[in-house]
Each structure stands twice: as structure tokens, then as C-alpha cells.
Amino acid sequence: MNFGFGPALLFCPADRPERYDKAAERSPAVILDLEDAVAPADKAGARESLVAHQLDPSRTIVRINAASTADFAADLAAVERTDYRTIMVAKAESPDVLRALDGYGVIVLCETAAGVLAAPALAAHESVVALMWGAEDLVASLGGSSSRDADGRYRDVARHARSSVLIAAGAHGKAAIDAVHVAIDDLDGLAGEARDAAASGFAASACIHPGQVSVILDAYRPSAEEFAWAQSVIAAATKEKGVFRHNGMMVDEPVLRHAAGVIRRADAGK
Image 1 (cartoon, rainbow, N blue to C red):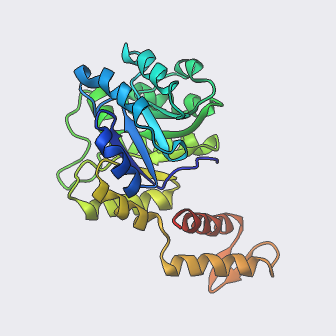
Image 2 (image 1 turned 135 degrees about the vertical axis):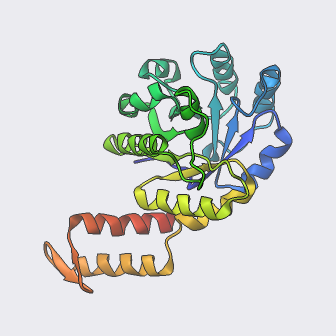
């Protein structure tokens, strides 16, 4: 898996160039958004801002409009005038849309019913580096009105989509990105979801407000206890063969991979 971003990805409206540098200062990576964050009348101006005010390409992703829209070709033409080479495709539903994106690292956003069903085929495409899922557009595509119940927990259909996209990404060695937490002030809820995302295997979580970045970074960073456990397990494995007992726990190959994942998360958070 060669993702190269994360673990916090901060969305920034592409028509607000005065926010670009601030977003880059607050987050390890920025998603400059030409899609939902920009009103139709402002999209042409947003594309010009994208070209005129460029950030570090190694820390920047550009979200372009869906291939089914008239803005797709114009967005792509604007990106080609920049040094950005990682594109997030909104409402991806078929690998066919990726033919126009040769030479780019592509993040496909599976945020419709068709997109979730197409996740395995999308993940298999050689240009795809990551898959992200989106709860709100997904529920809207189903004719629903809310992705969460009264307690703030994802409804079953959203949890199914989240798991499906994560598994599709993992099956093809691609990174998975967790959806944004739209309740900006619910930092406790965000922290819980980000911890679950990290433990489940997501490489990053997207967010929509600078105040959410540090919460995500803290959630993805292993605790001192987790890190010490991972180090001790890996150290013990150098002295043992096959399955062995360590501090009352059976350690086999999957547990060793869990420990290695903790070390990777620690390294990514430095």
C-alpha cells in the first residue's frame, strides 16, 4: 500500500484561495475541493484559483466533479495546468471513468449505491491509490434522509458501505479513507470514529474543519501502551519460532501483523 498522505485529510473549498495556506498549515494533507464545496456559479473561478495558488503537490489532493457532469473535463484541464498529480473523483461508479486519468494517482469516492457496489472493480484499477466512502451522498442516493440515528450512530446501511469500501480497498492493496464527521462540534464522536477507523485498517480520515485535524491525529496515533505492546511482541518474535505465548497471549502471524500496523501508525504520526 503506497498512499503517502494522512492520517488527516482536510477539505478546503477551491474557491477560497485565502484558506489554502492556512489549511496546509493545520493538516498533513489538504483536499482542494472543486465539487460540493463550490457553488455552480463559482466553479470557473475556483479552477482559476487552483491554478494561481498552488500548494505542495506531495501534500495536496484535488477533488474534481463526477465524470457524469459537464465540470469533469474542465476540472481535469485545470489540474493539468498545475503540479498536482493526485485526484479524488467524486461519485465514482465505474472504472471506465478512470481512462481519462492516466498519469494521476486516483482516489475514488464511493458515495452512491452504484459506487459502493463498484468498489471492488474500482479498487482493482492500476491508477487507483485509495478509496473513500461518503455517508451523506450515499443515503441521498437511496432516497433516505439521514445517515445516522437519534444517538448519532451510523445506520446499518452506512456501516455496510463503510465496511464494503474498506474491504474492497484492502483486497487490492489500496488505502481506505473514512468519511467526514459532519457534526463539527462533536469532537468526542469524531475521536471515537477515528479510533475505530485506525483500528479497523483505514489509512486516514477526512475532515471539514481545521479543529477536527488534531482530534484525528491523536486518534490514529497509538497510545504509549499500544506502542509498547507492539514493540514487545515484535522483539519476542525474533527469539521464537512459529506460534508462541507472550505475556499470557497467543502470538501468531496475524497478531504480528497487528503489531506491525501499530508501529506504522506511530511512524505516520511523527
